[in-house]
Image 1 (cartoon, rainbow, N blue to C red):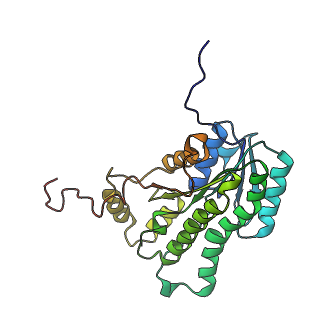
Image 2: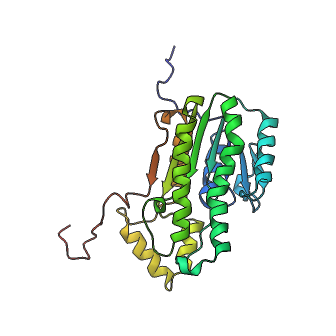
Image 3: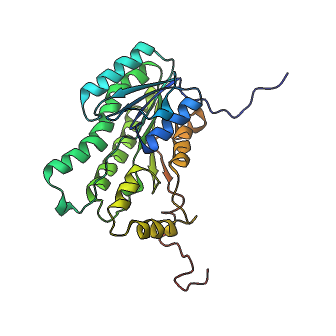
Length: 265
C-alpha cells in the first residue's frame, strides 16, 4: 500500500476573495476554483466570465461598506464550510502627489484599501475563530515599505494594510488565525497598467520598468496569485504575521545593473 504523501497543500474548503472582478483578485479566485475550492468573490463590478463555475459565488458590493461584509458573512454562514480562508485583494490606485489629492480623494483610497480590509477582517474573523482558525492573506504592496513617486496616498494606504495584518496576526494567533501579508511588485494588471497609462510615454514607461526587474520583465499576476495560494494552504503554517514580497527580486538590491551603465556585469 502506498504511503500518504508527507508534503501536502491542503486549502480551506471555502475562501472569500475581495477584488475578484479584475487583476490579481481574478487570478486568485480562478486558481482556487480550479483547485476545487468553493470561492466567494466580492467586487463592485460583475464577475468576469472566466470565473463562471458552480464553485464560484459573486457578491456585488462596495468593500468599504459594512453591509457588503454583512452580506458575505451571511452567505458564508449559509454555506457552513468546515474551514474558511480570506484574501483581501480589492484596491484602488490614483496617480498624483499629495498636492493633487483633496480630502475626499484621500478618504476614498483609504476607504477601499484600508477600511475595506479592516471590515473584511472584522466580519470574517468570528466565523474563522468558530472553526478553530484559518488563514488570511492581505494583499499590500512593495509600496507599503518603499516609497514610489506619485503614489503617496496609495503607499500610505498599503502601509496601513501591512501593519493592520501583522497586528491582527498577533492578536488572534492563540485562536488559530494565521494572517500574512502578500506584497506584490509591478504586475501586468489593472493598478500597474493605470500607472503606466498616466505616463507621458506609456511604452517607454513599461520598457524602463521592465528593465529594472532582475528578470527583465514585469510579473504576470498569475505568478503572484500562486504565492497567495501558498499562504492559504497548510504548507505555510509556520508563517504568521509574515510578509511575502512577490516582486521578482526588484527590492532585493538597491540597484540592478543591466550593462547599459557601463558596469562590468
